[in-house]
Length: 99
Image (cartoon, rainbow, N blue to C red; front, top):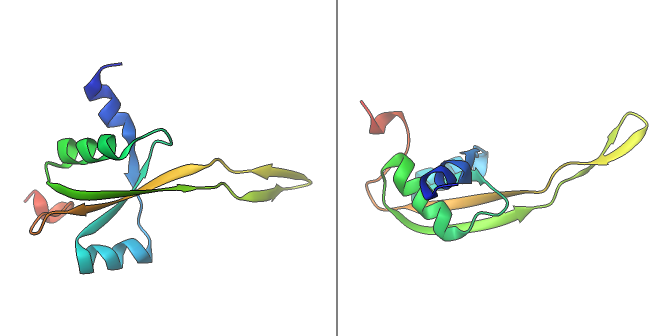
């Protein structure tokens, strides 16, 4: 797998919650669902390459999967990882970036 292919597999999607929306407005921060094996350097490079923005910092958190009841069976959801990416002042990700 080439380096560029890996960058596109690191980011799984944008993570939108009340917390990420408030942080985005207040401190120019975005939330992403990322690959469980992704490092902070990989996340930073992927966001900078794909969205063409400047990243100031990256914080990552591993989220443990919940134990759920599926009918009469007990199961467990997958563990996943999220990243909070702080963008440089004046930078943004979204529709207003590309007119």
